[in-house]
Image 1: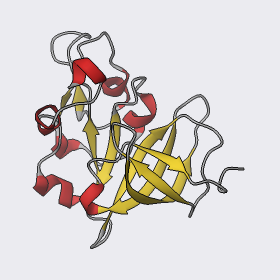
Image 2: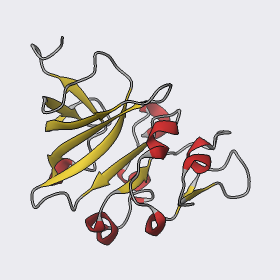
Image 3: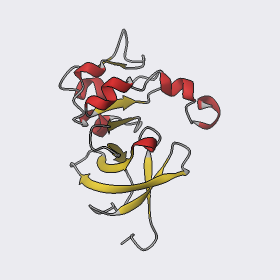
Length: 164
């Protein structure tokens, strides 16, 4: 329960997850912003106008999934780390994710890591495709994961021995 432990329910997630047809078309943002707080960097950052703030700055963002191309600019700008990109068109068996990451040391490209769900529990394995760093912005990890866990993965844990 979100208000008790910070973990959104299936009902909460259903309201923010793009529909299955859009998920299969290519990269698209998933915006897990559940609280009404004064914040709008995601809307200001979106070059395609896919994210807007209805009414006032304290409202939850509105997302028009048909306008999103999965560029991940919003991922780097969200101070709540509430946005990630999912691409079910990546391959037959795997999805590609772009997730915010603010830990160090950073993982390396091709590193096998443990995929974690919203509760910090292991969801399976992931492979790092790219580590996208920008000055003064959140790092974005590009990961491949099995499709069946793609909508659950929100972080990673590096395996022992991989940490330099």
